[in-house]
Length: 91
Image 1 (tube, rainbow, N blue to C red):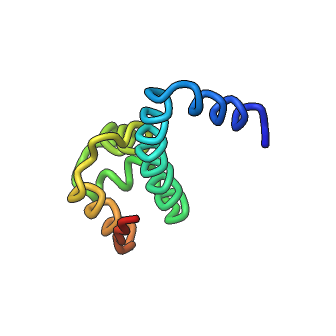
Image 2: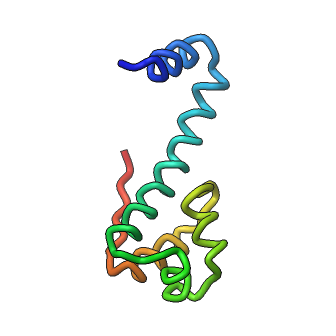
Image 3: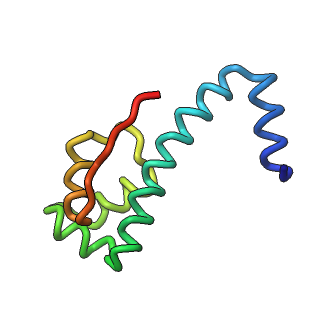
């Protein structure tokens, strides 16, 4: 475990607000990372993906970097533009 992981683990134990905020923030961050990785794997720039989705490059950048409160329909459009299927899992 690295220093950052130790810090996060310790902070979660001592600060319930941090723990809650961290999990929500990490989930949003993870969605953006997954979408960025899929775009890169498809060999597309943000501008090319935006053209396929019918939006602006800034919208794709915002999704990849700040995916909080993103609509499911938007994720579906991005997935379709990347030639992917969207799968949702509840745990």
